[in-house]
Image (cartoon, rainbow, N blue to C red; front, side, top):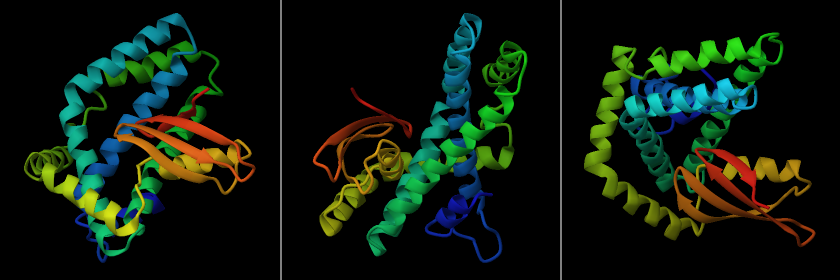
Length: 236
């Protein structure tokens, strides 16, 4: 798997790095987040191809989410909980690793879509093939039994330890004086692209999967970013 994924998995409950870069739960978390990110990337790109593709993209997202939402929430909880565990010990490390994983899934998905769609002469057909796969269950998170069981366990942990996660986050904020969001790392990189290097980034609203950031530039200007599931854009 990717470097960021392996680093994160070595960090907390997902560990098992001495013999295997990814533990079963670590692999399940990464695969779930990567699959959902790829779905959104394909849906967004194909939405610009044709009216037919846009309609199919909406159908694919709705159908996939209806079947997989609970499992995905379990994966997201696993990532957030282990991020908090590491951060308890090393103030910023866990948060940075989780942010890096969020960036990695987006970067991987963008490359996948670009490589599949850009050279295609019949983009409508490429989109239909990929989106119908999501719509009809080819990419469901229960396709692999081991992954499915790991995600079910994480969902059970979420039900039992959700309040504990909130307390851990509050403790981290008190210890470090920093409030991290999952898209913090992404906003830092995007600020550079918009001629705002070395931006001082502040999390304004943290209700994952929705986040809002303020990036204050060295010249006194500032940018506002709104993020959903790690996809961020400037707010006009």
